[in-house]
Length: 156
Image 1 (cartoon, one colour):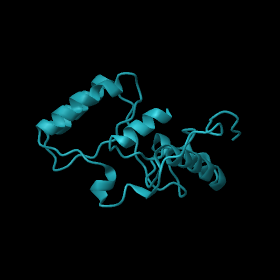
Image 2 (cartoon, rainbow, N blue to C red; image 1 turned 180 degrees about the horizontal axis):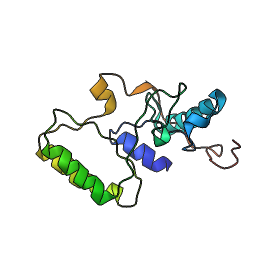
Image 3 (cartoon, rainbow, N blue to C red; image 1 turned 180 degrees about the vertical axis):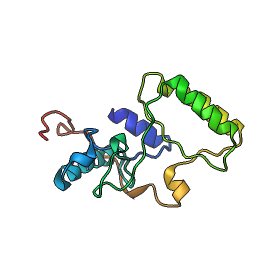
């Protein structure tokens, strides 16, 4: 997955945290949350050289320890495309969407969605751009991959 993350970052996409193990964050203690955030942020930093400024908690679940909430609805690709088309047809001033590969058909709809949004006059941008904030807490050079870059052997 490191190559995919690097490709997305190099292509100008904003890379954010979604936690290391995709757990139900509202069931974790402060230390466990720290581990979940730190491991993925460290990996993103090593791969891209950028330390993410945003996190989306899995399942949209949160409590006082989790700040940002957003999640995909779990729809199929066809259902998602119909939802996008309905939303675009209603012509809101802006649309903030979250795209998440929840089914094998979900990624295949994005070219159509992008085309339809642009044809309707919408400008695609990142969350950071919408908020007028930096996308990353800091940016440095990517690191060389070493043997310690592994998901194996982690105990939670």
